[in-house]
View 1 (cartoon, rainbow, N blue to C red):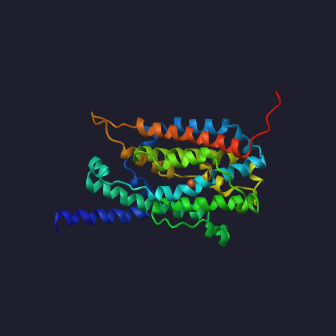
View 2 (tube, rainbow, N blue to C red):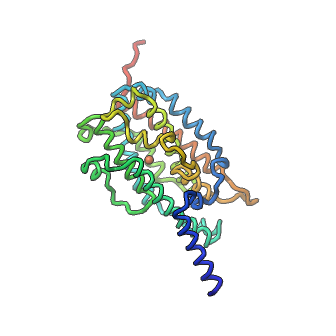
View 3 (tube, rainbow, N blue to C red):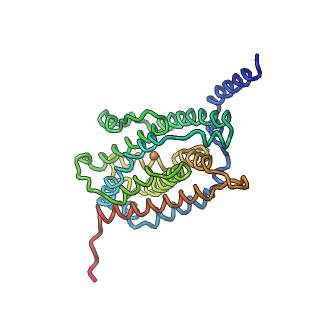
Length: 305
Ligand SMILES: [Fe+2]
Protein backbone atom coordinates (compact mmCIF):
# COMPACT_ATOMS: atom_id res chain seq x y z
CA UNK A 1 0.00 0.00 0.00
CA UNK A 2 1.45 3.33 -0.97
CA UNK A 3 1.90 5.95 1.68
CA UNK A 4 -0.58 8.15 -0.13
CA UNK A 5 -3.34 5.53 -0.17
CA UNK A 6 -2.69 4.69 3.46
CA UNK A 7 -2.99 8.34 4.36
CA UNK A 8 -6.26 8.61 2.40
CA UNK A 9 -7.68 5.60 4.19
CA UNK A 10 -6.56 6.99 7.52
CA UNK A 11 -8.36 10.21 6.69
CA UNK A 12 -11.53 8.31 5.77
CA UNK A 13 -11.43 6.36 8.99
CA UNK A 14 -11.03 9.62 10.84
CA UNK A 15 -14.11 11.03 9.11
CA UNK A 16 -16.07 7.89 9.93
CA UNK A 17 -15.07 7.94 13.57
CA UNK A 18 -15.64 11.64 13.78
CA UNK A 19 -19.23 11.23 12.60
CA UNK A 20 -20.09 9.37 15.78
CA UNK A 21 -17.92 11.39 18.11
CA UNK A 22 -19.65 14.07 20.16
CA UNK A 23 -16.91 16.62 19.47
CA UNK A 24 -17.13 16.00 15.74
CA UNK A 25 -18.14 19.56 14.93
CA UNK A 26 -15.00 20.80 16.60
CA UNK A 27 -12.95 19.03 13.93
CA UNK A 28 -14.74 21.07 11.28
CA UNK A 29 -13.20 24.31 12.53
CA UNK A 30 -10.10 25.87 10.98
CA UNK A 31 -9.40 27.38 14.43
CA UNK A 32 -10.81 26.27 17.76
CA UNK A 33 -10.10 29.55 19.55
CA UNK A 34 -12.33 31.83 17.46
CA UNK A 35 -14.36 33.03 20.42
CA UNK A 36 -11.20 34.35 22.12
CA UNK A 37 -9.71 35.69 18.89
CA UNK A 38 -12.85 37.67 18.01
CA UNK A 39 -13.54 38.78 21.58
CA UNK A 40 -16.88 36.98 21.72
CA UNK A 41 -17.86 38.38 25.12
CA UNK A 42 -17.31 41.91 23.88
CA UNK A 43 -19.29 41.27 20.67
CA UNK A 44 -22.11 39.60 22.57
CA UNK A 45 -22.24 42.48 25.04
CA UNK A 46 -22.56 44.89 22.12
CA UNK A 47 -25.39 42.88 20.55
CA UNK A 48 -27.12 42.71 23.93
CA UNK A 49 -26.71 46.44 24.47
CA UNK A 50 -28.25 47.21 21.08
CA UNK A 51 -31.18 44.81 21.51
CA UNK A 52 -32.06 45.62 25.11
CA UNK A 53 -31.76 49.40 24.70
CA UNK A 54 -33.77 49.53 21.50
CA UNK A 55 -37.13 51.23 22.16
CA UNK A 56 -38.90 49.14 19.50
CA UNK A 57 -37.56 45.82 20.87
CA UNK A 58 -38.58 47.01 24.32
CA UNK A 59 -42.12 47.46 23.03
CA UNK A 60 -42.05 43.83 21.85
CA UNK A 61 -40.76 42.76 25.24
CA UNK A 62 -43.67 44.57 26.94
CA UNK A 63 -46.09 42.64 24.76
CA UNK A 64 -47.10 45.53 22.48
CA UNK A 65 -49.06 43.58 19.90
CA UNK A 66 -48.84 46.13 17.07
CA UNK A 67 -45.08 46.31 17.51
CA UNK A 68 -44.72 42.51 17.48
CA UNK A 69 -46.78 42.18 14.32
CA UNK A 70 -44.83 45.02 12.67
CA UNK A 71 -41.56 43.32 13.60
CA UNK A 72 -42.75 40.03 12.10
CA UNK A 73 -43.91 41.61 8.86
CA UNK A 74 -40.99 44.03 8.65
CA UNK A 75 -38.22 41.46 9.02
CA UNK A 76 -39.94 38.73 7.02
CA UNK A 77 -38.21 39.70 3.74
CA UNK A 78 -34.83 39.32 5.42
CA UNK A 79 -35.74 35.98 7.01
CA UNK A 80 -36.99 34.76 3.61
CA UNK A 81 -33.94 36.07 1.72
CA UNK A 82 -31.35 34.79 4.19
CA UNK A 83 -31.21 31.10 3.13
CA UNK A 84 -31.05 31.76 -0.63
CA UNK A 85 -28.37 34.46 -0.14
CA UNK A 86 -26.21 31.90 1.68
CA UNK A 87 -26.94 29.21 -0.90
CA UNK A 88 -26.10 31.38 -3.88
CA UNK A 89 -22.89 32.80 -2.51
CA UNK A 90 -20.01 31.07 -4.22
CA UNK A 91 -17.38 29.91 -1.77
CA UNK A 92 -13.99 30.29 -3.42
CA UNK A 93 -11.78 27.38 -2.44
CA UNK A 94 -8.41 28.56 -3.64
CA UNK A 95 -8.01 31.18 -0.88
CA UNK A 96 -8.38 28.42 1.72
CA UNK A 97 -6.11 26.02 -0.18
CA UNK A 98 -3.42 28.69 -0.36
CA UNK A 99 -3.71 29.57 3.31
CA UNK A 100 -4.10 26.14 4.90
CA UNK A 101 -2.80 23.74 2.25
CA UNK A 102 -4.96 21.88 -0.28
CA UNK A 103 -5.46 18.64 1.65
CA UNK A 104 -6.18 20.11 5.09
CA UNK A 105 -8.49 22.81 3.71
CA UNK A 106 -10.45 20.28 1.64
CA UNK A 107 -10.76 18.06 4.70
CA UNK A 108 -12.16 20.95 6.76
CA UNK A 109 -14.74 21.72 4.08
CA UNK A 110 -15.91 18.09 4.06
CA UNK A 111 -16.11 18.14 7.86
CA UNK A 112 -18.07 21.38 7.72
CA UNK A 113 -20.71 19.90 5.45
CA UNK A 114 -21.07 16.96 7.83
CA UNK A 115 -21.10 19.12 10.94
CA UNK A 116 -23.82 21.25 9.37
CA UNK A 117 -25.99 18.20 8.73
CA UNK A 118 -25.43 17.07 12.30
CA UNK A 119 -26.42 20.49 13.63
CA UNK A 120 -29.60 20.56 11.53
CA UNK A 121 -30.50 17.05 12.71
CA UNK A 122 -29.96 17.99 16.35
CA UNK A 123 -31.98 21.17 15.94
CA UNK A 124 -34.84 19.43 14.21
CA UNK A 125 -34.94 16.83 16.95
CA UNK A 126 -35.29 19.59 19.53
CA UNK A 127 -37.55 21.86 17.47
CA UNK A 128 -39.34 19.51 15.09
CA UNK A 129 -40.97 20.77 11.94
CA UNK A 130 -43.69 18.20 12.71
CA UNK A 131 -45.07 20.89 14.97
CA UNK A 132 -46.04 22.62 11.72
CA UNK A 133 -49.03 22.00 9.55
CA UNK A 134 -48.51 20.80 5.98
CA UNK A 135 -49.31 24.31 4.68
CA UNK A 136 -46.68 25.84 6.91
CA UNK A 137 -44.11 23.35 5.74
CA UNK A 138 -44.94 24.04 2.10
CA UNK A 139 -44.58 27.76 2.82
CA UNK A 140 -41.10 27.16 4.12
CA UNK A 141 -39.85 25.13 1.14
CA UNK A 142 -37.05 26.48 -0.98
CA UNK A 143 -35.37 25.38 -4.15
CA UNK A 144 -31.93 25.88 -2.61
CA UNK A 145 -30.07 22.60 -2.50
CA UNK A 146 -26.84 23.45 -0.73
CA UNK A 147 -26.42 22.38 2.86
CA UNK A 148 -25.61 25.67 4.49
CA UNK A 149 -28.98 27.26 3.87
CA UNK A 150 -30.91 24.19 5.01
CA UNK A 151 -31.29 25.14 8.61
CA UNK A 152 -32.32 28.63 7.59
CA UNK A 153 -35.20 27.08 5.63
CA UNK A 154 -36.37 25.55 8.88
CA UNK A 155 -35.92 28.84 10.68
CA UNK A 156 -37.94 30.60 8.00
CA UNK A 157 -40.66 27.98 8.47
CA UNK A 158 -40.75 28.73 12.17
CA UNK A 159 -40.96 32.47 11.48
CA UNK A 160 -43.94 32.06 9.14
CA UNK A 161 -45.67 29.62 11.49
CA UNK A 162 -45.17 32.08 14.36
CA UNK A 163 -46.73 34.80 12.20
CA UNK A 164 -49.86 32.68 11.87
CA UNK A 165 -49.90 31.96 15.58
CA UNK A 166 -49.72 35.68 16.13
CA UNK A 167 -52.61 36.36 13.77
CA UNK A 168 -54.54 33.75 11.85
CA UNK A 169 -54.67 35.95 8.72
CA UNK A 170 -50.95 36.81 8.94
CA UNK A 171 -50.19 35.60 5.40
CA UNK A 172 -52.82 37.88 3.85
CA UNK A 173 -51.67 41.07 5.58
CA UNK A 174 -50.20 43.91 3.57
CA UNK A 175 -46.41 44.08 3.48
CA UNK A 176 -45.27 47.67 3.00
CA UNK A 177 -41.73 48.32 1.79
CA UNK A 178 -39.22 48.95 4.59
CA UNK A 179 -36.10 50.59 3.23
CA UNK A 180 -33.88 49.69 6.20
CA UNK A 181 -34.64 45.98 5.80
CA UNK A 182 -34.10 46.15 2.05
CA UNK A 183 -30.71 47.76 2.68
CA UNK A 184 -29.84 45.06 5.18
CA UNK A 185 -30.59 42.38 2.58
CA UNK A 186 -28.51 44.21 -0.05
CA UNK A 187 -25.54 44.69 2.26
CA UNK A 188 -25.39 40.96 3.04
CA UNK A 189 -26.01 39.95 -0.58
CA UNK A 190 -23.40 42.33 -1.97
CA UNK A 191 -20.67 41.77 0.62
CA UNK A 192 -17.38 42.59 -1.10
CA UNK A 193 -15.54 39.48 0.10
CA UNK A 194 -15.86 36.36 2.23
CA UNK A 195 -14.53 37.70 5.55
CA UNK A 196 -17.06 40.51 5.36
CA UNK A 197 -19.86 38.16 4.26
CA UNK A 198 -19.29 35.69 7.08
CA UNK A 199 -18.77 38.58 9.50
CA UNK A 200 -22.26 39.79 8.59
CA UNK A 201 -23.66 36.28 9.02
CA UNK A 202 -22.01 36.26 12.45
CA UNK A 203 -23.67 39.61 13.25
CA UNK A 204 -27.01 38.13 12.19
CA UNK A 205 -26.55 35.23 14.59
CA UNK A 206 -25.52 37.49 17.47
CA UNK A 207 -28.61 39.63 16.92
CA UNK A 208 -30.89 36.61 16.49
CA UNK A 209 -29.54 34.98 19.65
CA UNK A 210 -29.79 38.12 21.75
CA UNK A 211 -33.28 38.93 20.45
CA UNK A 212 -34.31 35.33 21.11
CA UNK A 213 -32.93 35.37 24.63
CA UNK A 214 -34.50 38.71 25.52
CA UNK A 215 -37.96 38.14 24.04
CA UNK A 216 -38.27 34.47 24.91
CA UNK A 217 -37.73 35.47 28.55
CA UNK A 218 -40.76 37.80 28.50
CA UNK A 219 -44.15 36.26 29.40
CA UNK A 220 -45.87 39.41 28.06
CA UNK A 221 -44.25 38.75 24.67
CA UNK A 222 -44.78 34.99 24.63
CA UNK A 223 -48.47 35.16 25.47
CA UNK A 224 -49.16 37.00 22.21
CA UNK A 225 -48.62 33.75 20.29
CA UNK A 226 -51.00 30.83 20.08
CA UNK A 227 -49.46 28.17 22.33
CA UNK A 228 -47.87 30.93 24.43
CA UNK A 229 -44.44 31.11 22.86
CA UNK A 230 -42.65 32.01 19.64
CA UNK A 231 -40.88 29.03 18.13
CA UNK A 232 -38.38 31.22 16.29
CA UNK A 233 -37.40 33.14 19.43
CA UNK A 234 -37.15 30.01 21.52
CA UNK A 235 -35.03 28.29 18.88
CA UNK A 236 -32.60 31.23 18.73
CA UNK A 237 -32.26 31.71 22.51
CA UNK A 238 -28.90 30.16 23.47
CA UNK A 239 -30.27 29.13 26.88
CA UNK A 240 -32.59 26.62 25.19
CA UNK A 241 -29.53 24.74 23.84
CA UNK A 242 -28.04 23.52 27.08
CA UNK A 243 -24.74 21.73 26.82
CA UNK A 244 -23.95 23.11 23.37
CA UNK A 245 -20.33 23.86 22.55
CA UNK A 246 -20.51 27.52 21.54
CA UNK A 247 -17.53 27.15 19.24
CA UNK A 248 -19.63 24.92 16.99
CA UNK A 249 -22.99 26.73 16.71
CA UNK A 250 -24.13 28.54 13.54
CA UNK A 251 -22.41 31.58 14.99
CA UNK A 252 -19.23 29.63 15.71
CA UNK A 253 -19.19 28.32 12.14
CA UNK A 254 -19.63 31.81 10.69
CA UNK A 255 -16.79 33.25 12.76
CA UNK A 256 -14.60 30.33 11.75
CA UNK A 257 -15.10 30.97 8.03
CA UNK A 258 -14.83 34.75 8.42
CA UNK A 259 -11.41 34.26 10.02
CA UNK A 260 -10.30 31.46 7.71
CA UNK A 261 -10.96 33.62 4.64
CA UNK A 262 -9.13 36.64 6.07
CA UNK A 263 -5.68 37.12 4.50
CA UNK A 264 -2.74 37.07 6.87
CA UNK A 265 -0.88 40.27 7.66
CA UNK A 266 2.45 40.73 5.82
CA UNK A 267 4.24 39.42 8.93
CA UNK A 268 1.99 36.31 8.76
CA UNK A 269 0.07 37.18 11.93
CA UNK A 270 -3.67 36.69 11.88
CA UNK A 271 -5.73 39.72 10.89
CA UNK A 272 -8.95 39.25 12.87
CA UNK A 273 -9.73 42.97 13.13
CA UNK A 274 -11.20 43.07 9.66
CA UNK A 275 -13.91 40.38 10.01
CA UNK A 276 -14.55 41.64 13.55
CA UNK A 277 -15.27 45.10 12.14
CA UNK A 278 -17.74 43.43 9.75
CA UNK A 279 -19.53 41.82 12.71
CA UNK A 280 -19.86 45.19 14.44
CA UNK A 281 -20.94 46.94 11.24
CA UNK A 282 -23.56 44.23 10.71
CA UNK A 283 -25.00 44.80 14.17
CA UNK A 284 -25.25 48.52 13.48
CA UNK A 285 -27.06 47.88 10.18
CA UNK A 286 -29.50 45.62 12.06
CA UNK A 287 -30.14 48.39 14.55
CA UNK A 288 -30.92 50.82 11.72
CA UNK A 289 -33.22 48.27 10.08
CA UNK A 290 -35.03 47.70 13.39
CA UNK A 291 -35.57 51.43 13.84
CA UNK A 292 -36.85 51.71 10.29
CA UNK A 293 -39.33 48.86 10.80
CA UNK A 294 -40.78 50.79 13.72
CA UNK A 295 -40.82 54.12 11.88
CA UNK A 296 -42.46 52.59 8.80
CA UNK A 297 -44.86 50.03 10.26
CA UNK A 298 -45.58 50.89 13.88
CA UNK A 299 -44.73 54.49 14.70
CA UNK A 300 -45.84 55.71 18.09
CA UNK A 301 -48.12 58.75 18.02
CA UNK A 302 -46.05 61.91 18.30
CA UNK A 303 -46.29 63.60 21.65
CA UNK A 304 -47.73 67.11 21.47
CA UNK A 305 -45.04 69.73 21.95
FE1 LIG B 1 -31.78 31.30 12.12
